[in-house]
Image (cartoon, rainbow, N blue to C red; front, side):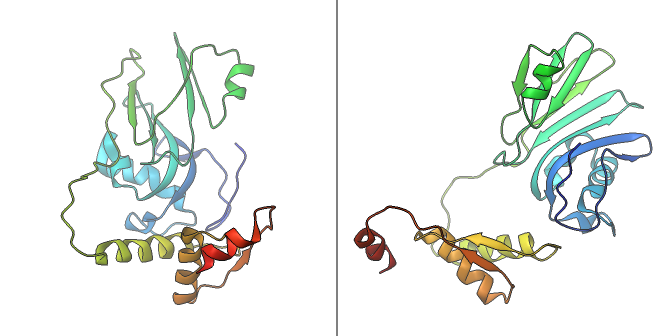
Length: 214
């Protein structure tokens, strides 16, 4: 496991507790709901112990994870709502493999390699390698009920806050001439969050870029 540590103390993986094993890539924003940890990933196993097989529904974050509980012969894989972190897996006979990339599985001789879709919880009972239907991490309600932007603004403010409040490293953003990075830029300033912004000058017409600024 190659670890890029951004929050908390550097915590080697796999994460192990009560003989339950977890590997994960991402960041859990609400990890303090489950305890006071040195690293956000340590909350995952406790979330499983508290909520059972569908525990990823209670995680707020960006993640691709796999958890194995040998006492219950259960293997759980999950991706966040938008699959910001990929996970590939292969189940061939009694052989199982998973990775953030396809190439390690290919090098290990796996042939039937699949990718776990976004917003998915997949449970496998390893005693018989049976798998019930997948479930979602987040249930989206797309019915329009709002008549103002207040809810969106509050959600955007919280989205920026929770991604920066526990960051151990310095923060930077890529600043383009678009609205999205500009909104993040202004929200970071409003929240008094230290950061650096970088822009890479391209070959686009200067007149077009100037029009976007207005």
